[in-house]
Length: 409
Ligand SMILES: [Zn+2]
Image (tube, rainbow, N blue to C red; front, side, top):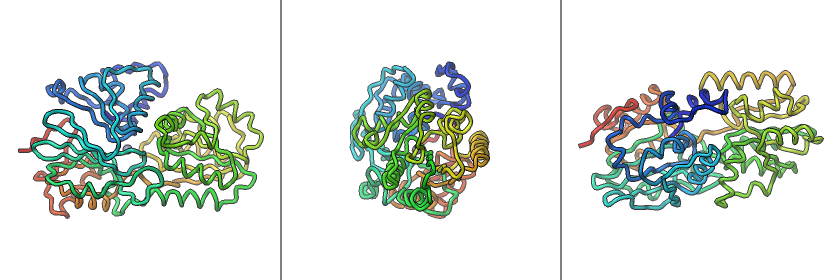
C-alpha cells in the first residue's frame, strides 16, 4: 500500500489538479501494480499496514478499494491514513481497524496477525507476523533496533525472540551496505543539542527543517527551543497534518508549546509581520529543498528576511535522487549568498544497517529470507551477510524482482 514517492511527487508537483485514477498512478509506477496478484484479490482477508510513512500507507487511498476487506493498523498509522483521505477528499469502502502495538487479532479461520512493537523514525511502527498453519511469516519493514528511543515504545525484543517456526522473514535492507549499527534517536538528539544549545545564536533567527512525521525529532527541537527561551512555531501543511494526527490520538501535545500555521497565506503573513525573529525557533517544511515548501518560499519568495549568521538546521539527510540533490543545492547556495549559517545532516537514520540486520535475523531465526526496500546492489550486500550467517542464495535467501513469485513447499 506504499507510494513510490519520487514518481508520485514528480507527477503531481506542477499541478494541483492532476488525474489521480488508479490506472494512471499504476501506469507511472506511483502505486504497486496489483495485476500480478489479480487472481488472489477476491480472497484477500486484510490489509495490514506496518507504519505511517507514505511509502507504506500512501497508496491506500487509491488502491484499498480494490480489496473487499478491512485495513488494520496501529493508532498513529490509521490516524494518518484518515487525514490523508480527508486531505484528498477520497472515501474508501474499507473499514479502518485500530490495534495497539503488541496485539494479536484473527482475520480468518486460519490466519492470525500479530503486531510487535519495533523502533523506526515514526511512532507506532510494528513488525507484522502472519500466523498460519504453514508457519509464521514476518514482515519487518521498516525498522531499526533502537534501545533508547526518545518517544514511543521500545522494540519488543522479548516477544521477537520467542517466535518460533518462522518460515520466512521479509525485511528492510536499505542500509545493508553500511557496516555499522545505526545509532539511536537519542544520538540525533545530542547532535541537535550541540547545534541548538552550544552555538551562539544570540540575536539570530533559528530555522529547523526535518521530516514532518518524525514526532520524536520534533519533540527534541521543542525541548531545546524551550531551553533557549524561544517560542516555537510550526509552519507548513505536512507538519500540521502529522502533529494533528498525534494530537487526535493524544500521544503528543505540541500545540501547547507553539503556534501551528498550515496555510501558505497565513505562513506568509506571520513571517512578514514577525518583528523579532530572534525570539523564535521556526520549524518548517522543506528539508529536501522541495520547491513548494515553506523553507523554499522563505528563501526564494521573500517570505522572510534572512540576516547574516541566522541559523538554518537541516535535521535530515538528503534522500538520494537527482531532484532532491538539485533542490537542496539551490536552497543552500541562496542561503550562502545571504550569509546564513547552515548546519547539515543533524540526523541519524530510522533504518537499521548491517549489524541491526544480523541481530534481527539471529533473534527471529527465519528459515528463509527476502531482502526488500533497497537497490539491487544493497540487497546484494544483504545476501552476502546472510551467506556469512549460513544462508545460501536461491536456497533460503532470495533476491526477487518486482512481480516475481516464490512458492514455498
Ligand atoms: Zn518507514
